[in-house]
Amino acid sequence: MSDAKGAASRPHIAGAVTFLVGVADDAHSRTAARFAALRAARSGGSVALVHVVEPPDFQHWAAVEDLMREETNDTAEVLLASIAKEVVAITGTEPSEHIREGRIGEQILGQIDDDPSINLLVVGAAPPDAGKGSLISWLAGQLAGQLHVPLVIVPGDLTDEQLRDLT
Image (cartoon, rainbow, N blue to C red):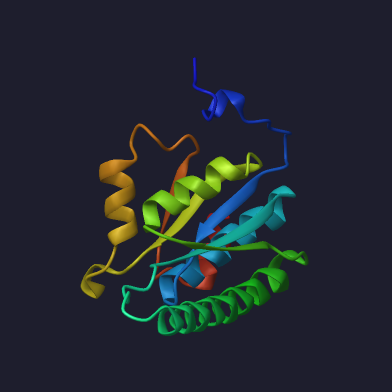
């Protein structure tokens, strides 16, 4: 009993699991990506990376806004390429890479809705003293009824040895 975008409508092939990793330029995102890559490598699955950029809040001159958007996208591409390199080192396969613009939670849901092959959402949790975690807070507070794939929260301070033991 699920809507058109729900879990029941998602095609699933045993062993063909796609892990969508929400990434930002921080250590806990890289930990989440390594976790997903290790799980994918062990299960024959794949990894998709998504980075969400906030739209520029500069409306005075269109040319300046376009330049800001271009620079932000360039930075996002470099970030995704760097994390993708780590995923390839673990899985031997290229992850799909996605840059989306807008509100982070809405764009994560949009990526899941746009790609029915995604089976799990993986996010890294910042250590408690980092004072971050807006995506996780939003996911937990707002998405309870909207997220139709399992959410895996990976502690961002796990070591590579701990990641290997868990996967």
